[in-house]
Image (cartoon, rainbow, N blue to C red; front, side, top):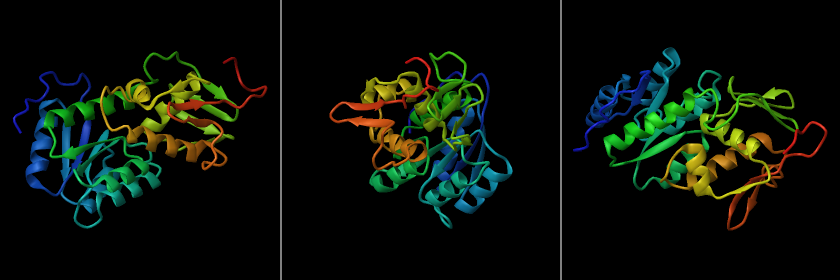
Length: 251
């Protein structure tokens, strides 16, 4: 690992919890994140990681999937099922051949992943990208103010969304994706463009977008298997089709 860490630290250091049972990997990751200006806590197994995440809520969790005790997927599952961990930003560390687990991690609500063996610098940049999104009062290039579409209401500044008056438990990326769709109704976006404009990435696994669209559908569609709000335009991408009624504002 000969990468040099980013030279300039973030203006607002984050508290990051790194959960990995490999001491060498954990030390390298913690070292690079510390040199990037962050405060780092470490855990060596799933039980300890879950306890630390609940006791001292970090700003972001770097989570290895292969852990002794409860594995990373179970840690993520339990966090997402709890009120205090539903929107905790999570970056997964996955093995190169564990595609099924990586997809499942995204389906459970992970915000990003890095595949081992990885560049520590890439990990730091991914972490900082997720942190920027989580700290934004509203997605970039958007005007403040609530967004209303049918029975969906989204407040970018408070980062809260409701449907039928009930709050939607959205992860960081799900919230930003929904906000983007609400601001750009009836327009088809390829997955690559969504990755660039919502994730802020010029590269990456496009299945990340697919999984997040599927998860968002499960939370806002009456029938996720037959979606009417976020529709697939085959061979092109996805389009948000708002419900047309008196509550909708101008397109």
